[in-house]
Length: 222
Image (cartoon, rainbow, N blue to C red):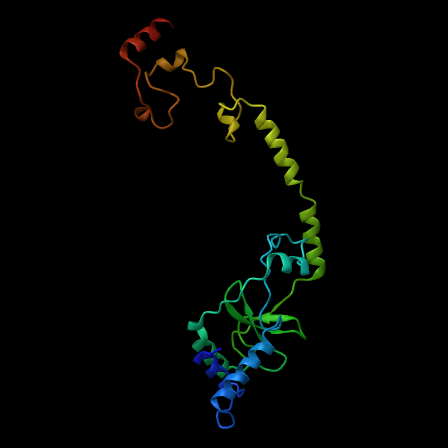
């Protein structure tokens, strides 16, 4: 398995590989062993492809990981130069780790002892740490979510209401109110202007107009 030049230069800048002490084959084996040993949950944040992740009350376990698998981390290699330049100017201190995020395809920095994360190294002038949400706040959000009405029962009631309506009625496939048998039929008052009042818009846009004879007959019946 070959190693890309970008990754090789990154490991050289950290002092993991020393060209003076290792041959080419030894370097390649050494780099592969480092990648094998460091490809763990500490360097790549596992994002399970679970459809229930949006639920705050759901916590993925081994069953979700086995059934839905994890999202792969596809890092954009075009950002490696900027990443190495930034880390050369602002080195990563001890107790901090660079972690890959599969959702954004970017790296962030994590301190497990403190429990905070950041998109920039801790020495960076614009460093802004983010802490995990408080457990009590999380529990309160879960209680609020559980107190909401059951969406499944609500949908059942809506289906029951729709099934009791004539399928030809527009209320059966939309949110408009249920009409009666005369809804939409022209009335005597609609012949005053000679326009189709069932059409929305200004008066001159209400088409088609009835025939002149129909207008005269409607006016006589008043």
